Length: 87
Ligand SMILES: [Zn+2]
Image (cartoon, rainbow, N blue to C red; front, side, top):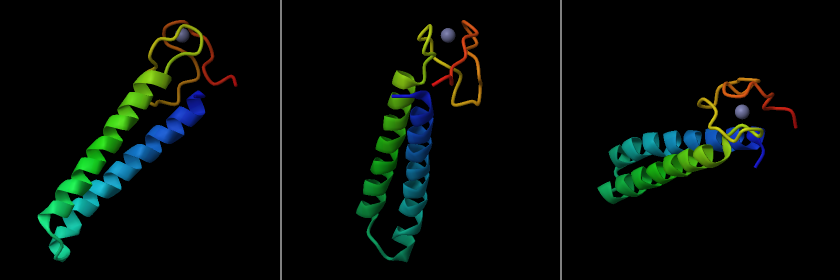
């Protein structure tokens, strides 16, 4: 997975998790059962975990394979100073 795709996928998963978390608190107030709350919260946690796993696996310097800092807009690897978005 390319770094740009990794960043997009992780951000999408985080956004999805946020939406599900907010929905899990709003929907029960609209009369749905607490079971729905737990299902939505569980799905949100799964999305966050998937995002963290993808970030840990693919958000790495293409040259030295070290983890890059968060999803920052950095142009060079802080370890080896190799340009990271050169594809
Ligand atoms: Zn590097």
